[in-house]
Amino acid sequence: ERASRLFDHVIIAVAASPKKNPLFPLEQRVELAREVTKHLPNVEVVGFSTLLAHFAKEQNANVFLRGLHAVSDFEYEFQLANMNRQLAPDVE
Image (cartoon, rainbow, N blue to C red; front, side, top):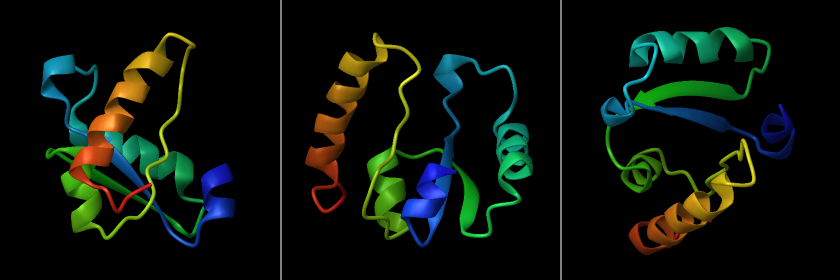
């Protein structure tokens, strides 16, 4: 919800992530996210199976927002941010 107040348009990008063996298939995870965000008119939920940087370019996105679930996620997210910066330097 915070992102929807900060930006004109927000895309929630749901990754396929087959190597993570998700509990629900991609289509169901997209539908669940759509259900909980349906009250936010400027939020769109989209599934993707490419690299996030490539998906962002396809969507003409200019900012990545990622959440941290635990302090231990910080190092991993920091590494991802550095890689995304290399792959998509125009995206913050």
